[in-house]
Length: 466
Image 1 (cartoon, rainbow, N blue to C red):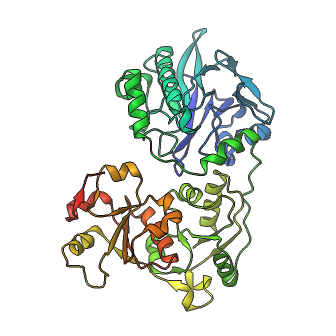
Image 2 (image 1 turned 90 degrees about the vertical axis):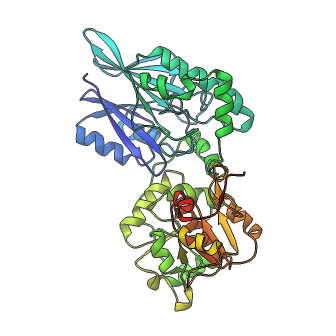
Image 3 (image 1 turned 180 degrees about the vertical axis):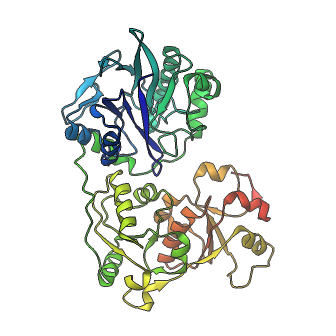
């Protein structure tokens, strides 16, 4: 095989982009908006990007395809049926794109994730003919699952689920068992109906492992729709931005804010986000800030929680961490933070009165508290708040807990019963965000920074009732 395929992973959003090359020319599939990563890879490989392919108008991120095509002079391939506000090479089912003497792309219509979704079969020249190496499946056939079908509205979900079933089976019939499957979604993306069950796969493996290729159509549709949970609110803005043609990104440093400006922004109701690890946040933080550490999917939860368009200020220990956060945020269309500050909380506060701490516990402490033996130094848990998603809650939860998914919490703070709140999620990350929101609302709160899988083992009283 003369064709090489490289993965460009965006783990914070659960997506992958791809660069396929014959050693001289390159095809890029579903690039994220920060295209400097793609250009750097092409430079390291010594290849020229000649074609940029979109499998669909993405709902979970702002595409870098248009900008990459402009920067490289590449042809930009987008489905002919998608209505877009920019010039592109319109492609449709059955089109063949010859990239070089040894590399070509075949276009296959695979609706389901969207109505106009395309997959791209990668062919390699062998012995005077062409042989399929694999297929870029976008949000169609994923590893052990498929792309979700409700992102264009619940009214279309059932119809698109049937399309998704037919599309996956079409790919299975079109390609040999040894062909590689290269999806865009499925590695933590909310665009996936469920999570990937492997780091790589082939058509043959999917025939054995993927429900879409094992179940009858009606059973697949029923199971898929029943398993779908909520998806980020910012998705409503992504498709619109991608159809309009995203502007190039600006990742230059934003203005510094001093302590007085930070306090003004917090008092004005803006979002000031602390990017440090939640343990550092708990030890000391600027009152009124929200904990969303860079060690987790910061951009997903920030984009989901905020009112779109509200100014965002970033706090971190180093300028490099702020730069990392900026890169994550441009991928979901939050282009320019309002301000930044680096260092430590003492430097961000106008006085000691501006600093707060969070009390931290684990599930062992909660188990003890449930039996009336709350560990010394911890307040009794008058409310246990679970901020996981609905599917997680239904699979099992702490007895007598209150359930409000984190994305709903800003609008439902008044529903949290009175008293000291012990808040948990699946790992501590979302609970830290929730704890900061509760503390900002004047509540007494304890952060359970622990893995939920330990709760029952620790002796916490549990229930599986939904």
